Length: 117
Image 1 (cartoon, rainbow, N blue to C red):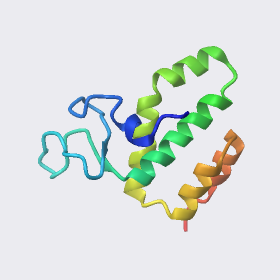
Image 2: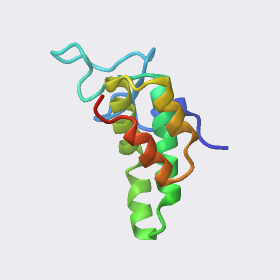
Image 3: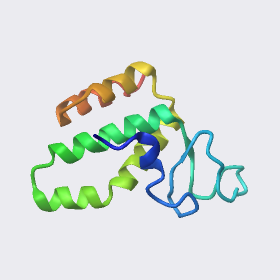
């Protein structure tokens, strides 16, 4: 069974640099901009989408050395994807496209939906 998106958010300590916080979680120390230092609170929908994107990218990587490197940076990949989704307010349609993807080519097609409007 794949990890629940909420569990993936808690892989890193919530107070650690670059940690992911899910909307509704208590944030860490708040910086001058009103947002936690090095942390953007992401939506649960975006976190689930980001976990799926990381899973597909890892599964599609055939070079074992590259795959190991991506797996090692999985938390960063999930965090960046979830932050981008939340910040850019990806539509339900775009998130649904990513969630339905099973190949890198399908992820790329979904990414094209994010192009200039």
